[in-house]
Length: 360
Image (tube, rainbow, N blue to C red; front, side, top):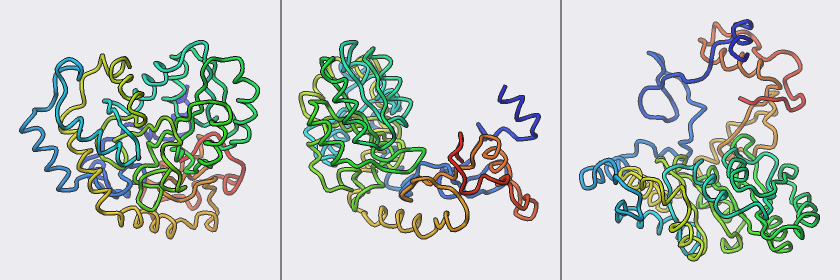
């Protein structure tokens, strides 16, 4: 139906375009160079010589795969070095790294909770968390976006009926670019004896003076959060996911979480690349400052008549067009030479109008 509608409206399919070269500020599609607005390479580490060299050295020593799950025979020194570095960065006792970011949320949430439990989450939470909640069989209850008072009321109503409760938020929302009040959510979780889980996929490398994420931004004790989740595919320019927290939690997951126990260990070059990226993030904090300064200084979107919602301008700035059709037309116009673009690819009423069903 979507394809037929796009064909009828003469909107080109914007998906699965083949990009050549390194994903950075610019990208090569076909034989043309474009500005790349759709990259996770937030602090410009992709293609960094030190990271590429680390990945190549790992291939030379360990090959391209560990060829087994880590509990069986896939454990390599790089895995523990990466996990220890991530644990230190998050101020936690330990960490476990898995092969995929989406699958990390699915397997961990699906494994920790059961049908007698409760999962309370932000209404705009990532699909991976919703899928993990569905797998667990727990009662799932969303609250209004960013509203810790709504989460408080929801837990107050539902918590007494369930054995365990998990409160889940994102540190930096991947489609909206806004952030939660972490201290407020910590207080709610403690008040209702709930675990607090924060998804840092788009926060690490972006938020806080050092780029260490949401706790760094708010200056709170990371130990106040029970489960820190993150991915290696954004600022850390690799692939995979991880959970950081108490040693007992990590030990339990390493011995029982299906997505870890029954999955191949992380590929050596991916682990080496992520480890080198963590080291660069720690040693070059100016990258984080440069990212935030550039985005804020170039944004000015409201003044230009564009609706960017509640984005704080850290690394994610949506342009909300009001409809999928408008978003598709705008995307198509951006591939055209400047002198061939329509004067205004956004139809009347989409500028600074109500939030629509799509963003670009």
